[in-house]
Length: 392
Ligand code: FEO
Image (cartoon, rainbow, N blue to C red):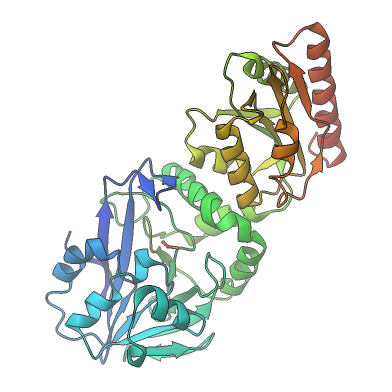
């Protein structure tokens, strides 16, 4: 892909990864992704914002082939998918200065092996003149590493946001054309790496509010020509008030837990709640993460196997705990054959979720009449809890 003009003397460069289906060996990528770099040609100086993974360097170097000099290599975020190719770009432009936040220095030195003499730090709010174009750096920590910052191009009113506002999408459309598709991809992206830091995300949203932004250019996905679309979406996702939603990640081996999950779903839906089930044996964990952005209640369904929770249920629980969702209620439901420590183990895995525990329900074998009554009691409690926080 050749460099693509965004506005006069500002170009997209980078790599569109159509085939990657698993980011960081963890995150499913149903739509692939992109690694965006941005080249700015000022009247006096040139700058490249972020690079790509080292394995994708050939494409970036081809895009830079007609760029004789590079004055600044700006790194907004030190994770390797944006910083990894810095040493390779510096080989072509040994005099380029690597511009980063103060907190990025140690990471760049240790993770990427950038030579210290190339590094120049900028302060929060500092400006860098390229002649007729001016970049202002705004520290935006924890979106999603401690050193992250964004850069505002004053004359063109473009906010380069790196991972902030990103979305994993491979497409030839430089700008957002299908908002529905981008909304889901961006929500998945937020859920998987930004949600645990949503209180700081809120502060960063406030911080950029004073800028007159015409476009947001992230490091993954497409450029937003309607910034309010993605900013408003983030404001909704960080809102601490959950939605009237119960998320039910579960596993079932012989159908008993599944029967309980289905009955709980049926009763909750009859009472006006929305329920989303995820069979962890086959679920895309990104879909589960998206639901956790909004859920008021999480109920984990697991059989007991090898004296504990099913490993797939434990994995879902571990993920939910790591993402620190805003859920206010949590419980466990499931079945066992002869015994085990399922409740104890799962309960010990959700220490990050500051939620009230609703009395869990583990039954022996396939659910019977008395068990269905207990499931109805659990549903009544969930309904009552949702009423108490104004969701019903
Ligand atoms: Fe796209 Fe945190 O790297």
